[in-house]
Length: 465
Image (cartoon, one colour):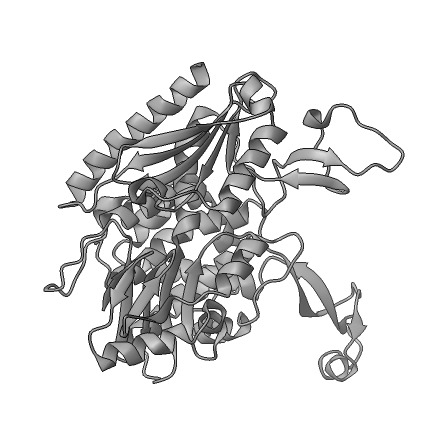
């Protein structure tokens, strides 16, 4: 069964109604954490965003004129249970009901840009096998992000029998090994080690990917990935392939560490990859399996690949870096220059998606929204307007742009009152030009390149104005 994101769909029969009804009764959190489920969710690492997303359902049902209607949101991907399967395509995919496979070139193009893999090497359909292969493509980015924090270290219990005691003596073992006295003592201690259940999980994932036809291409494409793979292999000398099931079981509890924050998504991805066969051959009637992608997050990350090259700042909510300080709590001290400060406490801090030229006469703020403002000619949401005005006035900006995907080249803007009028500030709503659908991969690549070139020219014109 195929649906599009952010759309309404009539339900044609009772089988579809029962299946979609089952999904509508489950939040994303229940699908993710349910016993026996194998569901991987690709979304922002920001806690507030994730918590809000996990309260949603993949699909919702409602009655309209006596008919059952399925309503989708920003979630796309594949979800299955027993013999029931649902694929949610992007709204820029043309669904042909006569075919069993649907080619979503736009979705796969965004993924290839964000995760830096070769789009030509993979199928682009919305079937189960295609989504499972995507898990391999995600691995290098999550590995490199996690390894930027260093190799994960964890206290491990180790046993020794030597004359350098630094732990608890194991009396029974000592009597067994060292009598009569030979100068050694048997003891146990806890040591920080890079060879632990988490790094072993990553090592097993690396070896699993190597076995696949695309494995070498994925792991050897980037020098950073090659270096990190080698470091993991050197740090996991106790690796044994026959321990794979035990290692997966030991990683059921997800990493919670104040420093190694980026290992959370890597650990989840590794489990999903190693349980990939479960996705294919799941026998349980009640367990769910699949890959769900938050298009709002993916759209923002795609825009980042374009704007970072133009020297835009991309504040990171998760790590708290790059925040814009709009004010300070007064505690007897007064700071005159907020722009040069990055206060983490007792301050009003905000995270615009992208900004450029702060403290100049041409500050630009861009917010990526996976919404259909221009094409549908709909009014801006109140929260989006308030957010952009706060950024514009707080940063004394000249241009604030809400950037959406769409197939209309129209754009519109608002002149502003008060300080905004004095500074000739403008709030704009603009599309990155897309097509309703693409005939093939070449058509998608060619059109997207032209669209990106137009957008980059637009941004450069703003920077030079």
